[in-house]
Image (cartoon, rainbow, N blue to C red; front, top):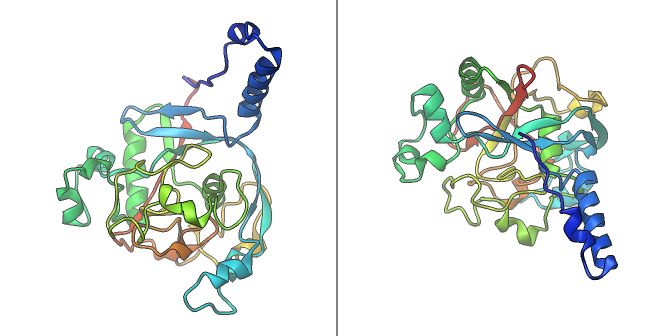
Length: 289
């Protein structure tokens, strides 16, 4: 059941001061009209929660190229160019994106194995850790098995455009929050102890998503191409039709701060599984509920 929480009009009308009631109503309207505030969600039988990301348009890529380049330890003239040109992208339909990265607990329930770092699985909080040693092929295999188990929803990796739209959550600039506030929202080398942390243990972004920056890199569906943005479709881009590496986004617990930006692009061959790579999923209804 999808819900929005609105103020009780009868209570508002009994307010002693009508101006105060009017303010409450105005705020309620903003919560519906502002996509960064209205939160609908669904939950599957495994307890995976998905947040509705509204349709809309945004600027994909990096506008502040020089500012991004100057954050690099050894900036060069060609750095950050794969994040350009910044361009308007339209996400034509709402979609449901995982509130968190897929956890080891969910992975084990679906796949019945424990790949990757033994130490991650030996921790007391192992079930709440993100699945942190997944190749792109492993993520796709998980999707296949989950789709077999769930009769109600179909799952997939987000596109690169969907991922960045959700990570930006209506924000502009290099990051959704000030650099000085980043430790409240992300696990990275400054605060992680160089190990993965339980999902949803930092603050959520404006869409209600956790760990879009930091904790583990997140695979997306797209092939990587340095010039992808020059060829990008304006509406619901799917990325290049072929390539040798898949895009991963968001940075990880091991990353310095300059890698934690919604616009930052990285890629690996789809068969490579490092201990900093995970994923989150999109859920779609298989049939009318």
